[in-house]
Length: 321
Image 1 (cartoon, rainbow, N blue to C red):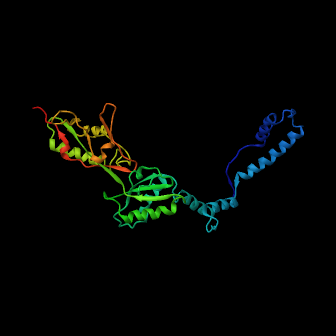
Image 2: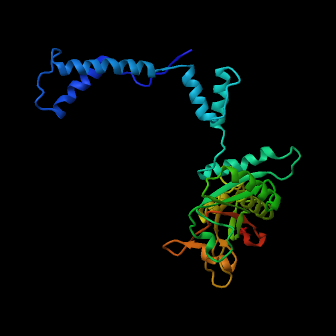
Image 3: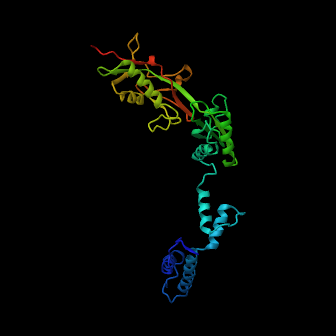
């Protein structure tokens, strides 16, 4: 049964008026635009034929549906059920992701690997990050941050806080290979973590327990920067998001029993010390403001923050009695 599908709603009158308005642009000598003019008669005839074609175009019949379904399902497709069921299946197939073109496609297909795992599987994909134009498997100096056209790296984070197993990485790559474009090379890798600690001083409110505040501060920081449950949305610390000193102050100032947070001062010269601590190899990642104050710890697009807080770095100030 044909279906009304309005692709174009121009009528005979619309077509004739539009054609008459275009005459001066193509022929200045054609000045008689009355219905008695032979040229106008021919134009009206073509408008009549065009209106009929538009009507047929807006009527999608069973033959058209069958042709559309064959385009979607492939040339070998043959109708086995009624048209409505076949159309529902075709729409579901189109909506299902089976080709990886954008970074979001690679990430969704990586998460979809969980559907292939047995119900008793202990290791599942919790998060995935696609880094286009990058080869994170190349261990040469500087290669991991170099732009490589045609390469795509997918970083896999599992539900455990341990690196994904080789079997999981192989499983993800097997799932992505058939979906990639012909010229794309896929690299499935483990996440890289930038480990840091926090050094600040908490000024407590009256009657607050110093040891309790220190424990809560360490727990708050490690939870906030957790790869699975961290971040402001609780969905894991975002890949490549810098660690900002201002966010550290905000987190700790919101703790019950904390009056305010201040930098820890050096015991010898009483000068404020940096709030973020990293290893010697990562000190170049520390970014400072124009006033030479520590502003942030810079992460690369494929990296996650890893907060390993030493309780000795969290100082609780003693209040004057």
